[in-house]
Amino acid sequence: MKVIHLIGGGDTGGAKTHVLHLVRELGKTVDVKMVTFLPGVFTDEARGMDIDVDMYRRGFFWINVFRVARHIKKEKYDIIHSHGAKGNTAAVICKFLTGVPVITTIHSDYRLDYMNNIWKKYTNGLLNSVALRFIDKYVAVSDNFRQMMISRGFDEKKVYTLYNGIEFPEYNSIKLTEYPEHGGTELHEEKNNAPDAAGKAYKELFEIGRPLVGFSLRKWKRDVDIAGIFAEAGNRICDELGGRVVLFPLHYDKDLDLAEDVAQRMSTKPLIVKGHYTPAQLSGMYGLMHINVCIRFHGLVFSLSNNVPVVAVSYDPKIDSLMDYMGNRILHYRDLDAETLYAEIRDKWEKRNELSAEIAVKVSEFRVLARIGMNEVINVIRKIDNDKGMHEWTQKKNRN
Image (tube, rainbow, N blue to C red):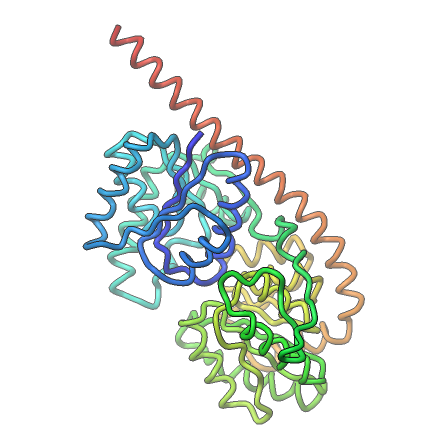
């Protein structure tokens, strides 16, 4: 069975990590290929993970979609698996041109994907909303997203759940080793980031010599002064808890400005982890934190994978779903203030050893669920392929 994955390729946050690991895992049981439409970290990391990936970048997007459809027909792919707005739009066009069925992964609330960009909301966002209605099967990364799709009129028999991210044992298995050139550390897998860059980052973290609190931030609502709230909480972490703040701009181009804004407002300057790193490198850095405060979903995944207590600030149902399963209190973005945030951080700080042990048990359970979800996705793909074969056989029989 041959499966081709379509994705825009501009992703640098949680969707990137999830898609790359999903494709790699699926590649162990089916023949997979990935297609992207943009150059950058996503495509580079895919190649670094030995994923078979082609980038269609010549000319206009729509011309490239027709080229992809021609490739699908020529190579006789059985399934198109799409991710994100561009991937879904391209996949549905390819479906109409080739007759190949489409399955998509729902990584977020698609109505909120471009809420801070009016132009993209009414172009990419609108096209995605229409394209989703023509897709054959849906894989949601949380139960909340599955219920969201069903509540919006999608057939519940066609929507499945695959828990996001924590199931992959390779995620945390890459251990740190001494790196003499910098007196710091490196990771064994260094395919997409120069070893000396990773070594320098680890050296800076080790030299702080104080308990570390990681921040993984993102902008969502413009009327919430997220930089001011986190700067005030960060100052109290330094002054009252004796900690040091470390800022992780996971969606690098979008989050770096916010991290620098927080840093400028803090009296004790935090460390900003600058540069692009592999998921394994970032996971290792998150594992050095004593507590992580996360708005970015994959900051939560990196933290929990390392049994590090988290303070979750939710803007999206997938965060609610994960935190509900972990039994973790949720703070909501639109209602956030510095006092509430710091109180939650202090509570987690005081209970961090106890919480770490509880997280280890929950994550172990979650990995089992996620593995079951992965097997279900593989079964869904096989069922689509079988249904396609049966449909083609019936058509051929009717013609005869």
